[in-house]
Image (cartoon, rainbow, N blue to C red; front, side, top):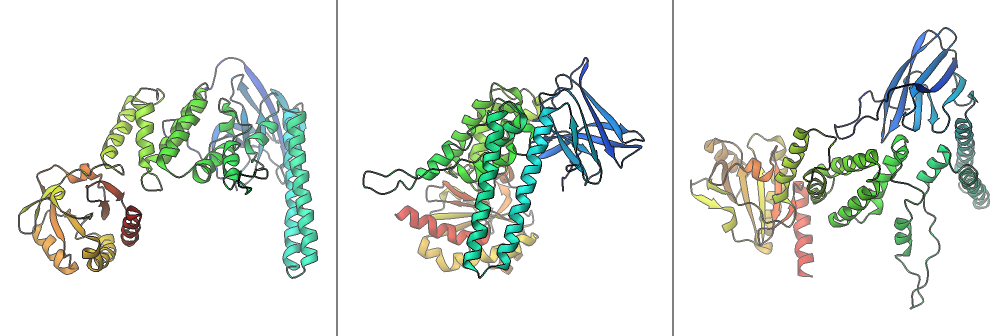
Length: 472
């Protein structure tokens, strides 16, 4: 079921496509049998969402007309009858055409006039659907014949034959109708077929060939200067797959890919804006530790240099401010020093603590998550403090020293405890980007950040693996 989003475009990074002025050169007539005296919506695909373009009034015979200017962006559009009933149509080379169907079954009952583009698109949709139904039927039969090896092979061979027919059908469209939007979509969806690996001088197959070939050919057929890619349900997911599963998951590798993609798109302002937005949004709050380095790089290269002209100055400044806040806390950087009072009102400098591993623990006596996570840290600390030369510098966020001491006794926090508000080195919230508690940073013996914002139960495993790796 399509989830229709009624927003204009996510974030102010992405500007709406130009509405245009002048004569309406798109004239698309719809007739939907079974519908009368109501309204329908025209929407368009953009990235991973669907957005409203216009509202059409449907008359008593189910007719309505969509008129648009000549600069209507090309792509895949949607006629929305209800939130569960809709059908797609192509805006590409045909400007004046008609589509007639039935509310009860829009795709199967579709009749198209004066639009070779949409006739081809619906031929493609129906062929895909029929082959999918054939595969589904074979899968049902395979489950019933799970213990019959010969029968399963017959079904498997039939499924492979169907897949080959489907591939041949798609390639045929690309060959015969190369300028069609359907061919454009097929090329955008295409996955590389990896050949057999070559042999190395030692006679063994090249084990890395498959990955290298797949990555090198992943985007074959895609043109990053063609913004029709954005108005399909394909591009966003393929882009996500590439950065999730194809690119080596290392911040420096990702940075190289980000720059390469954005530079390829530069000739098309809409694609350039989208790829800057996609990568900014993706790495602003990354799923994996250390990838905020990618965000800082993007901000420095595109926002600081004034290339993001489509956003307001205030938004641009806020993004730069966030990157500047994150920058000192990147993995590998020396952690900002904190000098705070301990429970005896003595000043303790974090940088003066002698330890192979220093854990910074930001906590609060009234924090429910702290109640659950601190015991994990305590157990690992008590068992491995001397073995791994670990120390903990625990920063309490409460202003009450009495409350802090009571909670320390209750939790048996037998490490260095300091009071966050009583400091000589500024607001630790700003220094370490602390919005809520608990937050954990792990430093090595040079006080370099080697991990941050780890769940407490993973602290022990990380430290053991880190020390093992460092030793090797």
